[in-house]
Amino acid sequence: MTLLRGITWDHPRGAGGLEATTSVYNQSHPQTQLTWEKRSLLRFGEEAVDELAESFDLLVIDHPFVGLAAGTGCLQPLEAVLPANFLELQHEQSAGPSNRSYEYAGHQWALAVDAAAQFSAYRPDLLESPPGDWDSVLELAHRGGARVAIPLIPTDAFASFLTLCANGGEPPFVRDDVLVPRDPGLRALSLLQRLAELVDPASFALNPPGLLELMSSTDQVAYAPLIFGYSNYSRPGFRPSLVRFADIPSSGDGPSGSLLGGAGIAISSRCSDVKAAADYAMWVCQPEVQRGLYFDSGGQPGNRVAWLDEGVNRSSDDFFKRTIATLSRAYLRPRYDGYVAVQTACGKIIHDGLVNGRDPEIVYSELNAAYSGTRRDSGT
Image: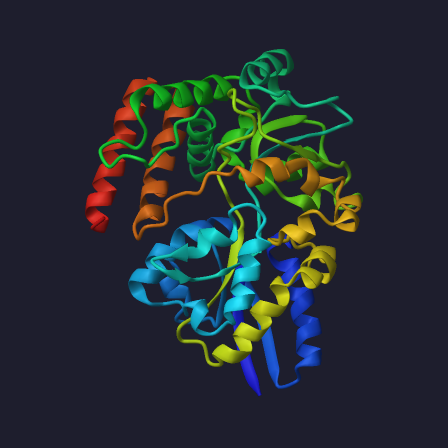
């Protein structure tokens, strides 16, 4: 019998669909037994995949790690073990740029089993409709005080900074000398700082699912302008109150530039049975499973067919239809080996600047120093 170990993250979105599909898969493939272990969302975004690949056969990963995978050889290039027509179909059916985000250095390192980006979220029983632009967001925050919140722990503060830059028409990481040009960088930092002065103080300690738990279980927060989407909270009965998701506010060009999130399923280069692992990965990513058992058990599909499925949308307050415009125009982060260190360092700088009300000019200079220093250290 083949025993396979997988690692994902600890939330119904990250584990529910995988655990349910694995149970069915194991029953229909008695010679293969796959089990899943879970880690925190923070570890999902920061823990190096080369270390995990030493112990696990299947890994659910964040796409910024594919540069590390290419450099270390810790993951199996999927084009070596999956049919070319299957990979081509996955690209055609990708929800936004999700599947492309796992392409790097000429190889496909994972399949988009899950798709997400930063969206806006609100309580429809507390707020009739969300603001459509950033001036309206600030006006609502002034009016509503602590009824507006945004995740501002370091990782998410940096994510929102990147989204605001790209949404304003100046994607970051285009130049090697600066993270983003001065004027758009200062505009994004200033907007974040104005928001930080107005939002619920809980914002500084909560990640996206933490804030969504607060929104869905209390009436403390009615609106979040930028938050990674979790369709679980749009499903009736998941929590006491339903959270509705919508496109992000616009800086003038519609819901563009939202930071792409999501998760990919990858195979360790040390996998004990690559053929069995590949077989499960293909099965769980096909549209019928994605829009069926995977979604029904809490998963958030990475396949566009599932995002447009009428039944999936009926069961989730049209979460997918309401946000697909934002997802389709999402901003794809860099994926070079060393990027995650940039993200970690810059997130801490922005978070500290927001907590302590530091001058955006100083914060901007420190971001550029961290960016250039980390890139130099990573050899890119």
